[in-house]
Length: 512
Image (cartoon, rainbow, N blue to C red; front, side, top):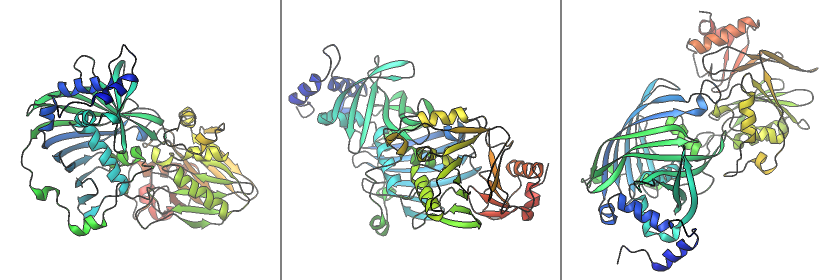
């Protein structure tokens, strides 16, 4: 009787279901049986897996809302202690975007801490990264349904869920901090997908699905060998298991973490985890791995004055430019999410008291520079974007953000979004600001800004000053624009990095 679900729990769960539908417990029991049964799943103690992975990023597409950007391929060696919920992943990543490079690193995740080892040594994971790993490891565990069966009080009825064109019976399962919605295949009874409802700074409330396929019997249990991770129906990660072995001995050293790192390790974040930001920045190889999200541990934002009434916001993974005009403040870009936008708005108002935020200029649509734009809409700012992305940002403003409500969700207001086809000028008695939509290979629609007083050019992504600027198609595109608009001897302020002098980088900016 050890495997039986308590009768009272069965009655409770059945009571919330329509009479014609299966109870949540029946769906879970059928899925466990389809995976090989209780005994087979309980017999799984360790897994050693060799896998390949591919990653994509929809928020870095060339065209707004267009084909997702392919990031690269990976090979992974996984060692998993299911009984103790410990894992190690050894990654070898062939990155194709943002920079073509090879990344090799290892991640060790324990229930209360995690570490990362790469070319720079071993360090504790941030609490945010650890929380994301805990949730995703639970999602992908072959014993997820066994845990649901053994904890019926945490399983509840839920309406049938759509996945693509099909409708699936489903249950909700609260597994610690995570709430999974598990969809079942009507024919095989196996789990078809494991879903979470995530907040995305651009797409709003979104289904994040792990879609399971290619089930194979390993050691008496059936384990999915393809795991496709989809955000709003679009692939962002695809894992393919090449080899799976169960219950092989794993050396204790595989999961070993030095005492000093265990002591320094951060606890898993328990609230306000921006899962999509953390996961997809990890996919991109660009996660700061900081609980501060925007800047490294110990860092912070600061204002650097480039000219009178012009401030460069630096210190984070992406920058802003603040331009104080006579009757209002213009801010360039809205990186990451509401947190950075709120800091920049507050800093701008403090620096230039009495002036409202009149305009937000978004250079292009990529999510790392636009995730905080809704905060400016809530502030009442006019949003200026390059053609042809106005319709895209109109949808961003309309997208519900109920999973993690932002200022616009709490106090909705209409947005004023203006599109720049080629050139727009904002000017008053103190400042002239020229905006140019320039051809470039990075995105379809890209604004650069020229603050005439001070001769400062704002450029995002095409140039990211961090030392000598290498010549490439992006820098050539900037150089062509500077020549077209007769801009000389300017200071180039970067959406990443710091500043550079146009005169000192003529070779990188020269025409083909």
